[in-house]
Image 1 (cartoon, rainbow, N blue to C red):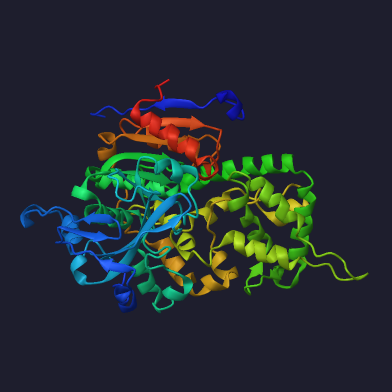
Image 2: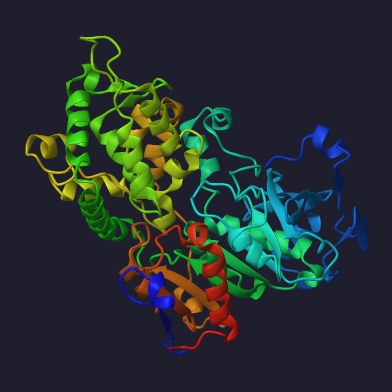
Length: 524
């Protein structure tokens, strides 16, 4: 029964309405690789393996939008179909402008997308669905078999998994690749092109270039991918058939909403900490012991395998993955079980285990995805700077989140959540060379708009959103306020899932949202 699926309250379907008035070019080796073939923009039709890739329709030059013109010029390389259990997949690469506002400058990057269909449906005419991953800075999923939301979506759709620019195979920005740009100011000039506004323009070029007759497609946005989808609704709604959002309603209405977001999120993080220690009260003393050990060590911490330093404040960052997702509490508890080395020899000096130190670095992953650390606060900025908002709001809480004072006073040490602090660029070796660029980004004020509230108020695209009542990353009240600005949106408010609902119960979440759009789910 449905009631058995909820922890405390039944899921609520709410209809919210706003009155209408209210990279670089592809490498030569890749171009010559037989697995990839160029798809000319002017081609009537080309056949690859057992599929067809129609070119976008010809239009009079005077009537073409800038993106449509860019789509006609875009180099598109498509690979042959390959298979994993239950799915057929095909890779696409597109050469798009680095700066969509100045496409004639000639600077291009590669954007990668993977087309996915149910096995045997390679030639079946199906509507397209674009998936936008969370982040910022994380690539799209790599399917290994049919399962979860992807299996459900492929029953009726041709799914496109987009590696957002700078991630995965889309001219990935890593500490090593960014080192090619030696000036911090030039790094900032490059990085400013990797936010939602340009991700949406990439998506529009791909739609115009890939979808037969350039028809609108459905977009599914998870977390930050949902933020991007709302940008899409604001600036290119003509490209959208419908939109599905999972934990992805961004804050609106201020030049920089970061302070508002972090004030709300710190409160939710505090609540998640309290719930965690109620479930695992024995971990209060475990964490105290670790904090004392770190604070008494030379330099205020211990060396990590990468050469960085685990300090008490860095230890708190485990909350990013441990407090806000399904099974996160359990994963964090089991990690803390392995924090100490066993005493193999009587009188041996106590030490934190290599296992724990290695797992700690793998949990954070900032070195592999520097865009997250560099651009996280900028996703809240339109014409204003963030000024290290998370660090500032952290200071407003006084000693509540101070690990050393909490240990001295016998209080539980609170882990932090989805916050990026300046210390990351000191304690993580791979980020140190990006420290100055990070400070420049935190002070940057001239960020372009990401949303158009007037367009959202008059939205005509069907939108359904899963809003998670206990979401630690996207505050429930902020999400509701944003929903009130998107005309016609249908909300599914639930505490059945946390922020990771699309991963933990993907087929159910996807089916429920589609039911809101196609009328299978009643308003109340």
